[in-house]
Image: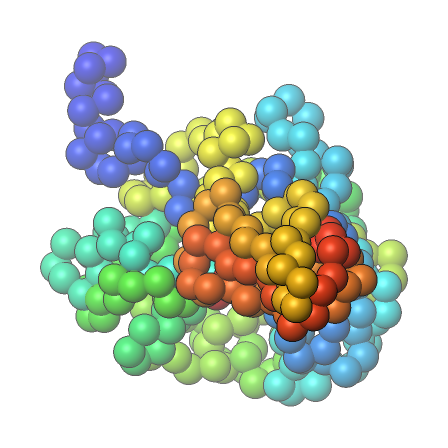
Length: 331
C-alpha cells in the first residue's frame, strides 16, 4: 500500500485525526494539584484528569507524579500509586480504581447506539511490584449503565510492559452529547468478590457487578507495592497506533477545562465600605467550578460567577490580597 493510501485508510478509520487520544494527560505531564493521599470513599484527583477511588476502610496510598518512565519512549513522567497501608482482607464490596472520567460530548465520534458503533483500543505502559492479572473496565454511565472489561497480565515485577486492549463498539446505547460524566475508564487495583465472582464481561452488557473485575489481583497486599502508568491512549479502531505526544501547552489547556490553578495574586479594590476584585480563568470551565484559594488572610467570600471567571468580595474595607485561586469543575 502506498503512503497516500495508508494515510487515507487511517483517516477513514478515525485513527489519523487530530486529538485521536480520548484520554487527556495520558503522559502525566500536567500536575497542578501536587501529590495527594488516597482517602476512603471519595475520588482523589492528583495528576491532572486522573483520580483514584477506593471504599476500603483499611488501605491508604500516596498518589504522585513520578519521573520513573519506560526507556526510549519519549516520556518524562508517569502516574504512581504507592501503597502505604495494606488491605490484606478485602471485603466483598471493596474496590480500588485508578481512573479517568470522560464527558459525553467528547465521545460522539464513537457513534454508539447505532449500527456503525466503533471499537476502541486502549494502549499503555505499566509497571508494578505486584505481578498477575489486572483488569481495565469501561463503565458507560448514560441511561442504562453498561460495562465492558478486559484483563491484562503484569508478567515481571518492577519492569515496564506495553499493553493493548480493544473494546467493541456498543450498538445498543448512545452516549449523551453533553458535559456530564459518560465514560469511566478504570484501571482496577483491588476488588472484592461482589465484582469478581462471575464471568468477565468482555462485550458490552448491562451493568452486572460480578462480571466486571474477574481475576483481579490485590495490589494493596504489601506496602512494598508500587503501580506506575504512562503513555495511556484510547483511540478509535482495533489497532493501537504510536502514542500522540502533545506539546505541553495543548495538554495544559485541556486540563484547565476541568481544574485550574490561577497562579497569581488578586488584589481587591477598597471602596471604603466594601472590597471587590474580579478574576478570569485562562480556559473556560466545563461547568461552574467550586473555588478554593491557597491564601485568603482577608477572609474574602469567593464567587465563581459561571464558567469564565468570578470575583472576591467582602462587606468591609480590606486590601489584603488573595493568592492562588483554584477552580474545580471535574466530573
